[in-house]
Length: 211
Image (cartoon, rainbow, N blue to C red):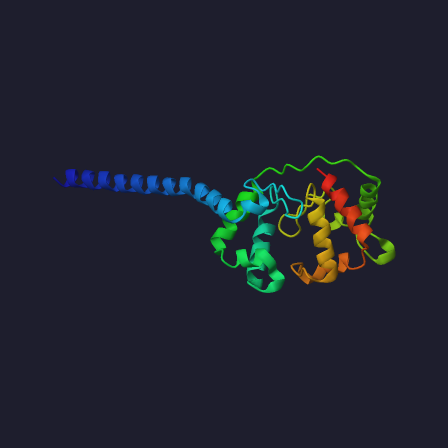
């Protein structure tokens, strides 16, 4: 009698464990769908469902470092609805930390598909700035932080290779005039501050060509 009771309890326990495991698997299977739906509802209009933006004024997020993306979302959320934060501040302030993490992970796993571009003399000037900076103005090499291939350092510095040149140039100008302040210790503001419009356009063109 006791043996049958123990066997019955063991079977019931095994069924409970199996049921719990199946439920956990079901929730894990649902989560990517929920994340993709979140991206479709909140991000895709500007950044593309796969993180490849079709408009030069919006950045492509595909292949960007997860930690960097998550950090930027938190920075935008901290600015909230302040005018300086623009559209991203208004969006990020309504995301939960879990949603930010899921979105960042989602985009980091997508494949970047940059537009085909033709090298120009201005882009070659940008290559010089990227690797050597502008010593006469005290501007350091971009490659020091963003990598020799523009691949970035995922936890700290973004990938720039293959990014839209229009977006890059606009952000450098915003760092230069101080309207973008999401750079720790004002690193990018110090770099962009001395750059001329032509130097900004040059390095932006070169970065857009990188793969």
